[in-house]
Image (cartoon, rainbow, N blue to C red; front, side):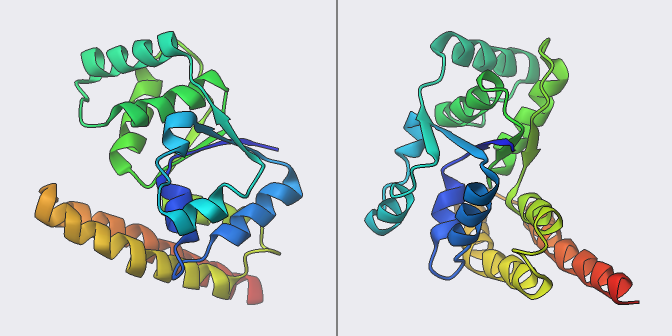
Length: 208
């Protein structure tokens, strides 16, 4: 059993009607008894009423208040030692929840949050075991860990649907509003492409 900390963009994107990964995620969590944690402020970011109705119907999600002193300490360490002020307070709450609850996995589709957490682990005096995962990394993790629930066809479809319906709109907004460059957009595409290629190679090896 694992402790999994979620950023708000994971339930929002997984519940998206054209992505439809939420039921799979819920099935895995309930079957194996994983603990799912979200900071209260991040939990409340799920505001679309249709998404909220589905999301809040699940009683396995623990809505927690993060320790204020630890939150401030982590934020100050990141700002002072990493010079990372590009992520928001709620992003730091996600990081704080992972550290405070000794989580095994932190999942977010915010690549800057993931990068900051990875860098923070290298400067922190704490021994932090938590693995940070973007969506494609998390999909690959689920595919490897739960082959009976996530078969090859479903996995390929999940990568394609997530890229088409979540990443492409994100990229358009990123280019227009947040000054994303071609390298950043391409790297996000390659993560999903590599998932598909690697799964096909693995499938061929398993059949031979």
